[in-house]
Image 1 (cartoon, rainbow, N blue to C red):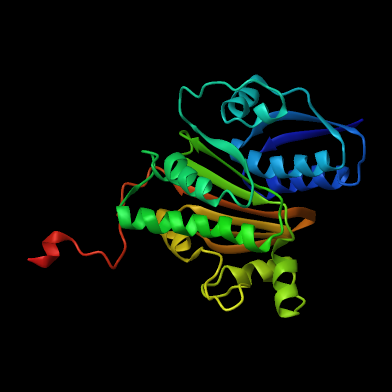
Image 2: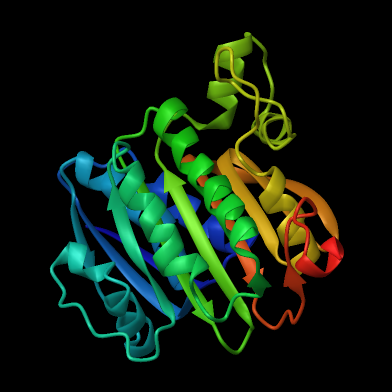
Length: 287
C-alpha cells in the first residue's frame, strides 16, 4: 500500500508541487492500493488537477482509498461532486460556494461552454461586466478547452472552481492529462524549448500550434481582464510554472513533472469597477 498525505494545499507553486510529488511517487504503480490523506486545508478548485492525477493511477489498475479527510475538507469536496466519483454521497451546497467538478470528454465542448456561463460567469460575486465582454471571456475560456481538445491528446478534461468569500476570490481550474505545452510546441516546430519557454511562447497573442490558424491559447482578453481585476492566471505544464498577476509575470520550475496541463484563473470579487469592451459605445456617447 502506498500512503500519501496532502498538507495545506492551496492554489500556489507549493500546492502544485505537492500534487506533482504524489503523482511522481505513484506513477509506476500497478495493482496497488494508493491511500490518500488530507491535512489542514485543500483548495477545492484543485480537484480538477487531483482528478486527472488519480485517473492516471486508476489506468494502472490501482485502487484509490481516501483516509483521514478533515470534516471541513470532506464536506466541500462532497458538495462539489468530486468525491461522488469515488463512491461518496453528494452533499447539497447551501452556501453556493462551489463550482461543480466535471470530468468531460474532449467532445463535450458544448456542455463545457454552457457550464462556464452558468456555473462561473453568471455568479453574482464577479465584477460587473457588459454582456459583450462576458461573451468574449466565455469564448476565451472555451478556447482553453478547445486547445486541450485539439492538441493535448488527452482522454478527459477536468474542471472545477471555488468561491472563497473570506479571500474575496473565485478560482476556476481546467486540467488535461495530455502531452503538455513543451511536447506540443516542440513537435510542431521541431524546436527544443523548455516547459517554461513553451508556456511563455503560447501565452503570447497570435502564437498557435494550429496549422493555418492564428491565435494563441485564448488568453489575450482574459489576460487583459484579469490584469485590470488584479486577479491571476497560472499555467502548469510538465515541470513548468507560469503566473501572471498584479506584480507581472513569474516563472519557476518544479521538481518532477505534472502529467499534462493545468490552467487556473483567479478573479477578485471585491472589485467594484464595471467592465466593458473598448469597442462598445454607450447611448450617451451617441447624443
